[in-house]
Length: 68
Image 1: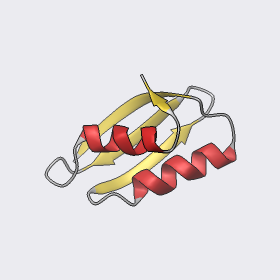
Image 2: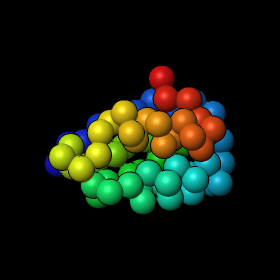
Image 3: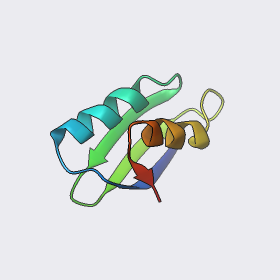
Image 4: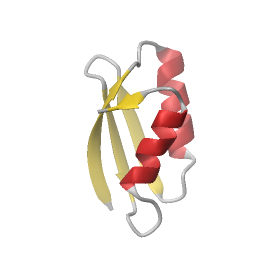
């Protein structure tokens, strides 16, 4: 398992948390995702043999947020 923290801009409320945790959490190979609104960070634990970090970033981007 790989753990990474992404800096994500545009998150401001509980809906943002649910949107990101829900969409990223559904990806095959993602075992946990936790959003920290105050720090604009998303912690993700995932299996690199099942999902790439690029796919995770793309999924967040598709929800309308910017991974920086």
